Amino acid sequence: MSNCIVEFADFLASGRPVNWVKELKSYRWGRAGTDNWQTGIGERLQMHSHIADAVRNSDSVAFGRALSQVSKWGCVKAIGHQNRLELFRLAPRMAAGASIHADDLVRNRCATMTKVYAMLNPRHWTIYDSRVGWALQELVKSYQPTGELAPELEFRIPKPKSVRGHAPDWGRLKGATDVGTTCGYVNSDLQGRDSFVRASEVLRLTAEALNLTGRGPPDDIGHARKADPTWQVYHLEMALFMLGKSAGETSDE
Image (cartoon, rainbow, N blue to C red; front, side):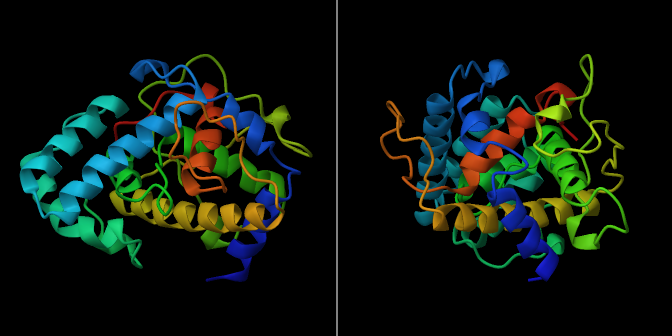
């Protein structure tokens, strides 16, 4: 683990660049009909339960049903037969939070595959789509506005299907010096997989740092009774999803 990753996570947890509670509570995913953050948490944990049960029982049929549920919720294309077989073989390692290299991951659309990985273990892996990538890239610029960027902090953005209106209002980032963005899009499948692995690591470390402050996530979780009382990767992914909202819709690349 590199020092720059740890230092960036500490910066994110400091509260200077982004208000995590505010962004989390603003969560909406209109295309799936998710109209509040509590429902968003409940949906993730329910999909996690279904897919984790299938993996635990080595049930390929139930695993296929769970994949279809994730694809429908994420509004992405259905996962093909060969990719389903590859995912089923990889799933036990992803569900266990094992160490994963980008080369181990299934070669397909970043935003689609990472939704599956995140549901296999939402406390360890993040969804990595255009919104999350865009938000992380801008947070890196807030952290390091000038100078050569460490490779570990290069988060490529999965190309969105469309860019609606204007770029996000990066003035919402506390201390932001540049409210524009220079898009570093994913130009290869490997770049997307690399960015996903790094983003997951950063968000795990950020959650750990936030929890050390003693200030947990909002506790008015409504019907999502199984939600964690401490910060987890899925909380931060939801917040980043909203921070990158105006950048475009979720990519299917």
